[in-house]
Image 1 (cartoon, helix red, strand yellow):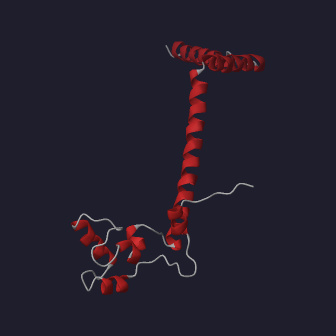
Image 2 (cartoon, helix red, strand yellow):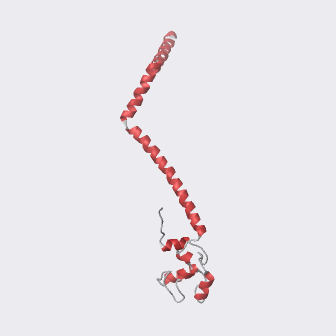
Image 3 (cartoon, rainbow, N blue to C red):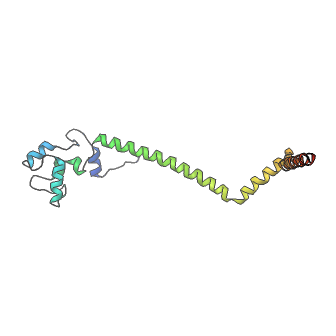
Length: 156
């Protein structure tokens, strides 16, 4: 049996158990920042203005402690399910596209292979010959032409 070990940041992002919540805590952030930032988005802008990252401390702790979703250190389970569903849709679309490409490639190969085209052509001629219809279009045209000539000469 094979065991898959996830990197700690990924396992943290996927885990949500007792004591672990994946949501931004705006109220706690506002208290810790003494009103400098009332939301995680506002705090993130403040950090960016100071060329700081979510892990840096601007006097009230690192932003990723209060805002794990905004900082991207975790993804709420609902968002993960949406991402999985989008990936499934993308895979389904790619499979359909691959089938179209494979079908068109097979058709192009058949058209590019002159031996296959000649074989099909000769099979059609042989089939018409065996049914007695090989020269039928020619004879039908000849009969039509002869009928027109008879009509023309009889009316003169």
